[in-house]
Image (cartoon, rainbow, N blue to C red; front, side, top):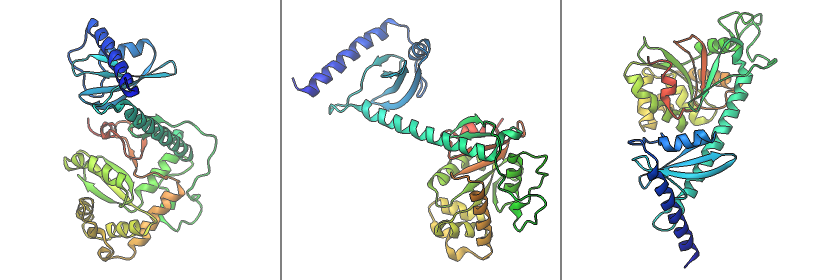
Length: 328
């Protein structure tokens, strides 16, 4: 018997015994995607472990099971049965191996995003007035920091740009309020119901994540649930041109819709009717650089539920986590 076939035999044998075990234990009627069956979730909870969803292959939901520093793999059927082991394809390829690598990449990306979020929170010092942040759909309160230099000009200095003019007394306002005030006074264009609660979003027009974020939110904008206030910015030639066009054309909403729909000529250089729009783009980019925001898209809003300033770094995996603050 070949080595691959021996491995296949062992995996199938393991799966058979695990399947027999699952028959002996009462199962829930059905398992929903990304929701583990009760048998598996109870087992992991008893062991103080953790579950990670691997995806669905061949009609089976895959799960990485982390217990006591070790990792095993399980698969659940639509009826709630559970099999521990590895999943193999008809060509004798170990499907679990590919799923596990995808999971490792995802967890590594999340760790980097969380680190970037924490660094940003420390720079903005959002805890000094109760501000919070979300990253990748996960809410996280900022940790207090000792002292950080404010990137805005002192109140007594003469301001040459409007983002140097905080609307509130900096001695009475925390940095999140100052930052929010600066964003409010920046150059942006609104999309959606004028009476709806709004979110300010820094976007590079050429950023694929920004356009994907826009497409995720568009149904809720069209329904009148929320309004976006888009701050176009960028230092590359393509971003400068498209951003200047957005801040120059008579109907930026229509132009943005055409552009995100695939018509890149909607924001071409010939659409720039006011050359001062380049200065507006530079001002938005200056805010971005001074506050070291780094990640696009970048959202900031005042929560209608508690009036706290909240930020969202990047595109959330689940936009409903963001919308839950607005849709009641």
